Image 1 (cartoon, rainbow, N blue to C red):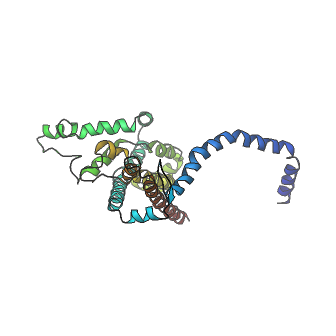
Image 2 (cartoon, helix red, strand yellow; image 1 turned 180 degrees about the vertical axis):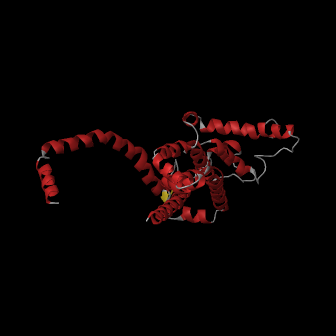
Image 3 (cartoon, rainbow, N blue to C red; image 1 turned 30 degrees about the vertical axis):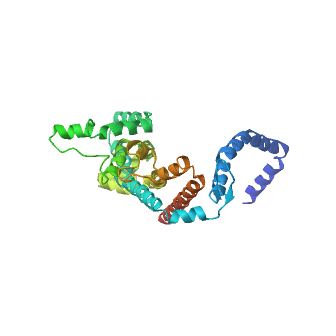
Length: 301
């Protein structure tokens, strides 16, 4: 300990003006990025908190209204409806699609290197999210869509994919079954696991499921926890799928919370109310993230 302290003192003694010059140079080179981030990142966030407590108008006087916008949101039936729709969509995403890339990555690990390289290439192919949503909308079309055409060939009744309030939300989630975005992260993590662990497990008589339960899942669990948080945050803010495929219908069955915010802001020009709704969503997501991180910390301790 005394030797380490002496070395630190010598470093401090020799870190005079050259060290300060490097630190000033680092701040100088970082200043443009800091200014850009402050102008387009921090300033809009601060402004959002201010506008939520105002009666903000593009033209005309701007007055303070306190918590009136938040009080209005608590009595707005569309707020409750759209929140329920967004959370229902999130639930379906987690149940139906979140585990697909994990399972695919585990299965790919048991296959040959050529298959793994091919799947990695497919994961890297850039596909526009909006373009794929439009394609799926044509697939779902009741009159000339691919899915109902196949059902007709099989002499089965057609399904009103996007016109039935009971299955419209599920139809929005189904495209996620073939988008294995995080799969590349899972596969790269699994490839870093020493093969000796699996060999030792096989020597002990462990089968495929036992290796997955005792080696693979514990290795992936930290990444799964982080991606679960990101998936929930992204799914609750769902907009493109519902806006392009259904426009919020049928009968508001796919009317999402973010769609309602956008409508309030850019159709009704009620920016203050839209801002208050966005802050409510921000608070909800922050509470979820805090709870998830605490659960993760308790599980690892």
